[in-house]
Image (cartoon, rainbow over all chains, first blue to last red; front, side):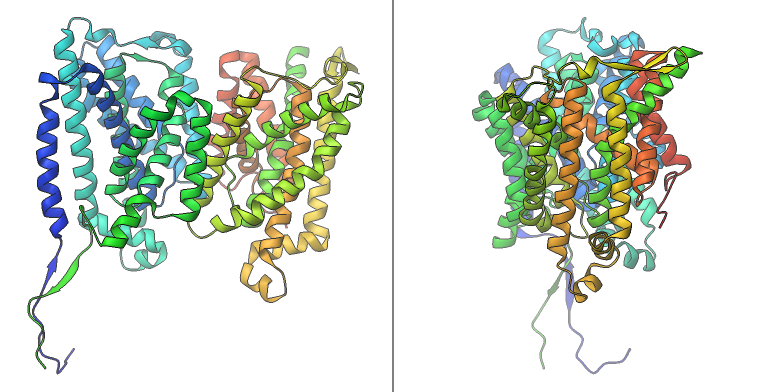
Length: 340
Length: 292
């Protein structure tokens, strides 16, 4: 193509000032959190662990639904499997439970591959309920296995020989590392070639396919990564909880709370689930004593936000102030104003 | 042998109830591609509504549930119309997420409000002994009068819905907005109104299903999600777009669960789910895909 316009010097910028300062601040905060086991209350660490599991799970649901367009109500299938994989490896195979956590996540990921063959037969709303049925199949299957205590569940006895202080500290660090790693993983994935392909698919499946994007492979990749994250969250949660049962592991409440977290925080942004988890933690702390009315409130809030503020809290802030801590977009920056 | 025959007959009758659960879902999905994840909770809400109405009417228990159902029908229709017109229409679009989140939020609200009002105790609508009456059908088999009645209602409803969808002006409007909303608008249809009518009718079906379910067995506020899954499975097994298909899907699901329960009580529901998943794998368009 020939053109008479003068060559314009430009560069593609992938960082923002917020992402640089934010990154530095976040690093300081993570280092501060890492000192918790030496001085903080055990109760704080327990709370942090639980919220870290929600954060990992929510990051993955956001990747799946917000970026991949696959709205699943069945991610608890993989969370529960991760938890049970941990317990089985720890109790029956003598694997150190801390080592078993990442292995459990990988095993869950492997299970997701055949599961996707069934789940991907459905689309849109039917995908959502179909994945829920799959989670129920896992719940009912495990409830019938007496080796892991059937419906009433079992305890993680493998941790018996380990001193309490060690157990609490290592569990906390594992949760912290996993939470940071899951944010980093999603961030890295979205900035990669595959991430770009995923965003293209979200905008138009047909158009992206015609541009050479392998839609099926990309979606499968996202589904499998999301299962890995869910399995990791499950293994961590039940490592801290010490007791597992099919109803606790495969309850749809996992996904219900996650949908709340992601929608309130801002779906389709990386900051969204983080903001959402913090908000969820606060609401939980101050209002969960209201029991059923608290849950009614969460349900109503999710409805109102979805209809009135579909971008969520972070979506609003980032749109209003052009603030991006995790920029995944590419911006064209002109080096100097073009001279005519 | 008789035991197995009995199992299958019971399964078929149970399937009639599942078909009733599923028809509303089938209608809503068929007309506007909306997946109502609160469908099961609305059935339970209707059951509790009928329960309270039947008590409030103070009539003899043989009549009260039926009168309550009659009172509930227009209320359910209006509620469905209003919900669609003022809430759900705004969530429809290419992206399934908003409608899923809104109906899922509704499910959580309904479950917890019911829990607050009625407590977690299971309840049943007093049908004046109808729920324990039975009739001999020969061969040493007896079936419950109420399950038989429910099956009959399901058959009538499937025929009525197929007729409504295929032979009436309203059905034509449903099919038109389903096939091409914009073209239907150009022909003078207001899709928001047509959608709302579809949900209204679906909710009337939900009211019938909920009342009968509450008469047949006990209900508790957290039962909804299970019913949603059964309804959904019946729709998919039968194949979308045909009410006869949905009916057949319900019966297949009912028989599968009954056989599963017969073999081991722990595997009944599981068997139903697995047959559904197998169907997805081997016949993803269902048994009777769009017949018209």
